[in-house]
Amino acid sequence: MARVKVIGAGLAGAECAWQLASRGVTVDLFDTKPDTMSPAHKNPNFCELVCSNSLKNDTLEFATGLLKAELRRLGSFVLSCADEARIPAANTLSVDREKFASLVTQRLRENPNINVVCQEVTEFDLNEPVVVAAGPLCSPKLSDFLRNLVGEGLYFYDAVAPIVSAESIDYNFAFYQDRWGESNSGDYLNCPLTRDEYTNFCQQLAGAERVALHDFESEVNFEGCLPIEVMAKRGIDVLRCGPLKPQGIEVNGKTPYAVVQLRRENTENTMFNLVGFQTNLTFGEQRRVFSLIPALRNAEWLRYGVMHRNTYINAPKYLNHHFSLKNHKNIMFAGQISGVEGYTESIASGLVCGINMARQLSKLEPIEYGTETCIGALGNYLEAGSETNFQPMHINWGLLKPIDVPKNLKKRAIAERALAKIDKIKESV
Image (cartoon, rainbow, N blue to C red; front, side):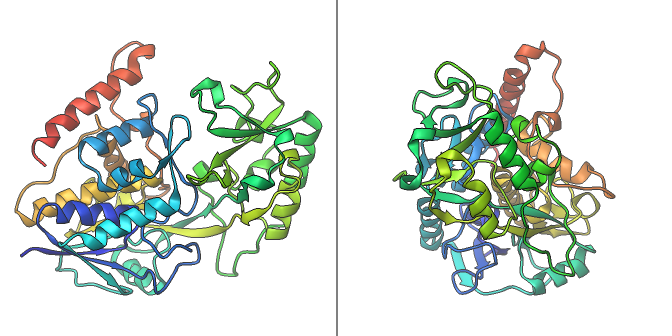
């Protein structure tokens, strides 16, 4: 019977293992949890969402929503668990982290074709079928092995947003409202700032003390997930055009000067995370500076933000658009270590690897998704990107094949074209 080693039980590894198992392949799913945790992990279950509990927009007006639609049509296991653990968050897919991780872990362990092995993998046989989904924080020994296999690794720093207790928020300075009225449920809690409050906040933020990097580290930030203090240093209006933008929010018929948005963290609504507040400030400075927000003056901080190193390979140099190594087609990379960025994107890479590895074992050609689909566009970006300046990228409309229709009809036309192709692909997978 065919047998595949999947290294890592995060979003990509869990999806990959399930897709393989669903096709009759025996999977040895390796993860160090719960015995050993990376510096960023706290939950003993698999698929722990470290940075945010949001998988972003879930409508076809956004590329990330289209990607979810494609994955659902192809039977994504991880996304189905996310849908089951969903909590109200307007048009975004946000989940109860604990419930989500628990669902994924329980179902993986119950699958008769998946053998969960709590063990660190430090090397593997290059002649065996292997999917490396070790995440952006794979162990030092495995990193050394991969470095010898694919060359010097790249890295950037990804920051995690803090969480506050709901009962500690001062609701005299906060109100529920969704931007542009996209939902009537009021899933976001808004904390408005006056001009003076905003200016002082930005000044204090820009000058706050950050956690010192190790001597062997240099800071390389991913532009799509910048620490909030880095943004504050770039100019006084940067945050008002980013995570603190007030557009689409009204209080007493007026638009605030700036708005900090809080998003529910769990089903019980006892915790909120600060949207866009990824940070590398020291814990003491986080408490001091973030407490300048009127609604959070007496906040109880349940988790402070942290920053960690994310490792990924130079995908354009080593991978093809099927996520396989160019010189070892039986070795695939999935998740952030492959060079995709984002939760849903990682799930997509795991699905592609799972389906194509199963096909490879059956002597079938890999599925060609094409750049008409979000799934195919991600793989194409990895293969066709710049070898000398490669950076991970979220799915976006610019990665998909253009379509010649009026601008106001473009997104709908692209979505219809993508889903029509996915429906055809579905017949063969």
